[in-house]
Image (tube, rainbow, N blue to C red; front, side, top):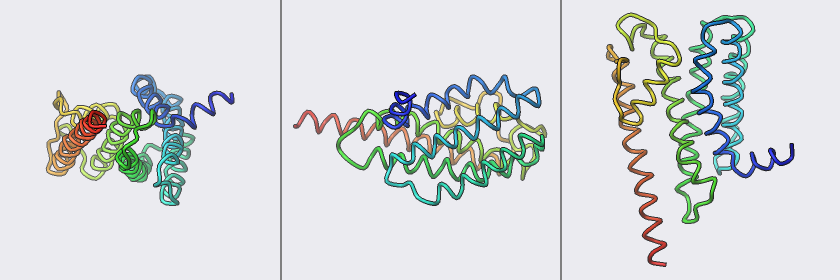
Length: 216
């Protein structure tokens, strides 16, 4: 047990990344039953907690992250035990704030110095997944406010929106999920810009560090 605690403290970004990628595989099994949706909510709380832990490794852990975490976790728990899916957009609104805050904080954590630790290297893909999750929750909120924004009148499920977020952020295309309203297209365009800037920043950072090491 102590070994796992030490591992979590030493590489919180790696643990967060592994759990989020595990969620990509597990989410399809959680969508078709009440128990599965409850497990989905509990899993979401675990990811939020790991996000808080990862933030503690950065200089940006403040009361802001804890303040956002409390209502998000409370809404997820209440929705899990009552089966009230109408609360999901409300919890998503708080979660997107936390994920965006965590992503920006960890990005600054990666870029703040010239010494790159192992956990900072794992922060590169972890920040990518944080932004993918953040935009997914943003899509959930937009879809609640503008029904049919991502599918010509039909409400998209979580996996559909997560897939849209990953394909948009990585610039690999939208596939069969297309934003069809102005609000849907605007947030997708914002994610496209964020994805391009993130990849450019990370590549520039790695090239700069490599050049510095050669000069040294």
